Length: 343
Image (tube, rainbow, N blue to C red):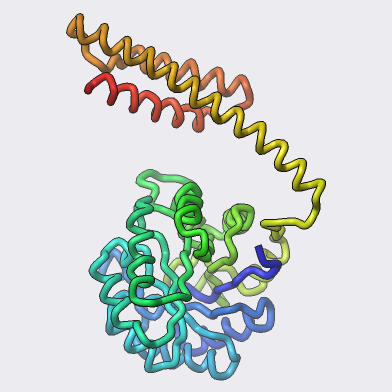
């Protein structure tokens, strides 16, 4: 990872020319961001919510770019938005989670943006669908876009949690595996939904080798017209950035590399042993399945499954492992066992 993170920051929404310029000036002086962000068109669930100031806000953003020499970026959701930001000299845009979920909209935007030289930021869809995220990125790649960045902004939780969205780190990790040359950054503001958790999420993203952060910052968050709880003041953002610990993806140290390789070799051996044990376990569950068929017994024995799940989770906890992780692991094993016994 580069020592300097890519930093994109600014208010959730452009609300007034004064608010945009005041926030941008503070951020320029304190953190010197790579991009100043602000929403111009806001996709809201309810029509009476604040849906952005519209095109007049583009002029305020242009002032930031012209006077402070900070590139500006906003969200686009259709071809018309692309045409408008091009007229005002924008060089980048992002596609939001809701838009990414609609391949027709993504294709429309990609075709409208072709030839302008935009840098494109693609947020993950609201649901943890890695193929949908990859597909949105590929639509731009197929039209010749080379400067594309993925933005991990969390996934809809479907249940109340302390966070606004679940990070589901395994999804961006899988994206990095599938697209190793793709830059991935994190949007801790939308994952956290509350300023109390933003630093924690940002550090986790850095630990996972993400190369940048997109964070919301407002000159006066208590007066914000949207998402006030997740917006930091510029000074708070500066303090947060100063407190982050940047990790190295590689290090030029032969002894370190040898130690790491030794430990990784041990993991390799254990991984293959796990696979061998799983093979033996499935062989036994298949025998059980055959016995059930002969006796015309239902495949799913819910009382037995409850005992297995509880006992393995308890034992894992005694061994210092996460109950949740082990429960998830055994749930997947059980799901596969049921599938094989049903065939």
